Length: 408
Image (cartoon, rainbow, N blue to C red; front, top):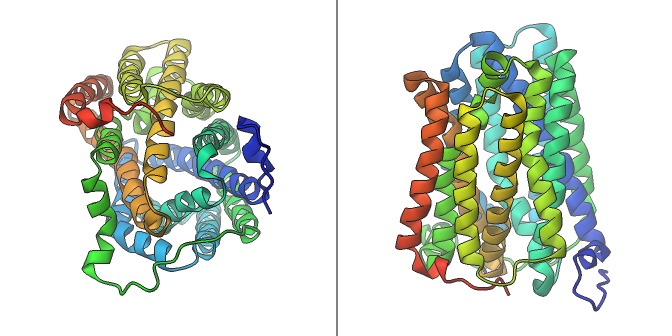
């Protein structure tokens, strides 16, 4: 049973036993995924020396997410979310073990590496929306925005630790990094087993095209939610520079795999500081405008990073980028989850995950293509400009989102 203090403080969410297990599982999952991202990015670039191949890694993660999103959302609403989540953790653990053994024995090639990432992407298509839909059932609605901020703070802490660990482990070999990935995913699965919560089931509804697309219909009918989700899609799709970090680390900044880990951790440093601040000082007014301003800062930080040839300036730009991004994440996540009925959270979270996955993985593919065409620096710089243009357009297209005043 959960015990909440009467005071509505950021610490009250930590009195929830199930939420604590959930957050630990989520941290373990994210650290594993970040280590995996660093190791795969460096390994594929070492094998090929190609920016396009780095883009293909993003595409391999995006395609299964795009193809399976609606099915994953339906499954999350019809079946036990806890069971789905821990099955996904164990399957990802098996994938990490396969990469470790394959790298150690020397049979991993570019094609095989991309193929395994594709399969892991298929598992992640079910993992992400199901895990997102778990948290609203673990805390009261009145402190949910603070729970999101606490979760985001821990998420970003994991995003700091993961890439740094991945970069350091890669010095001793990719197989060591992949082995730890496997252990952490399995640990996340074990923690999820201990979760207990009540879920409003949609089992009574027959499977139909209408129920399959219900999440999309709900989002389309709510302009504020549609605007928030689509803003993330297009802004990060254009402004994402993370796919090019291996090239910046090796060719422009000359800092090696350990430096790459620091670059990947830098956005999370800014994000964890901002998340901690938001957990203690929740956003109360003009949240719509604040979200738009934060994404504009994200775009400018991307442009500074693109042009920098100094490691410290690049690091600072990424820290600011991460701080701005987490403001958008907290507002968007709170809007989506609080405005969605529990029996539809799986399907809506699945669509939201598709947008997030599109903005990250497809954005990596877009960055790889534009870098191959125009060069790395122009591609990242133009992406930052594109992000700011999207914000200005969305402020005109979604006035309802601009006018959102409170998350309560």
